Structure formats: structure tokens, C-alpha cells
Image (cartoon, rainbow, N blue to C red; front, top):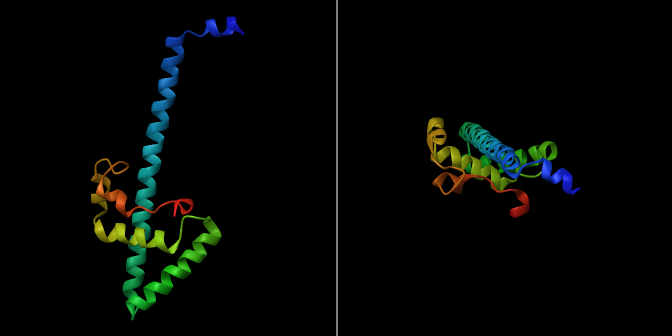
Length: 123
């Protein structure tokens, strides 16, 4: 076992390790960005659908409840009424899609984070 460890130099190993870590970070940021775009699109569709309703407040309440149930059945946790309200708020607070894209550090401490849904197990 000691021989095998000496064959792989630590600098060589660390270089490869760093490539993997950086690739994972980039993938994570990309996935998060795509997810935020999806939440924005969902929020936009919710707002557009609600605006078609005659009694907006009443219709919106039932719309989110029904949508939450259907999405939950097909996609599992994460589409609670609360999270759908966050998605709607994301769209209402950033009505221009480009504003979401240009928000710097949105996966960190930006104001955008306040509108992102939380995983159901954290609620």
C-alpha cells in the first residue's frame, strides 16, 4: 500500500483535485442559475394566469393550492404553496428577466436570495 501512495505525487494529485473542485463549483453555479431562471419563468406564468381571473385574490389562492398539489404529485417536494409564492415574488420584484441574469452574486448574499424557494425539508 505504501508503494502505491508514493507513485502518485502530492502536487500531481492536488492539481487534479483542484480541477475537480473547480469543475464542481462551476457546475453548481450553472445549475443554480438555470434553476433561478426556471423559478422566474414559473413566477411569470403564475402572475399572468392570476391576472386572467376575475376575482384575483380568490382565484390566486386556489390557483396556487391546485398547482402545488399537481406539481407535488409529479415532481415531489419543493413546489409547496409557499415556494410558489416565492416564485411569484421573484418575478414581481425582477420583472425584467435580464435583471435576474445580471444580479451579481445571486447565489451568495444578494437581495435575489430573498425570493428563492427553500427546500421543503428546511421549511
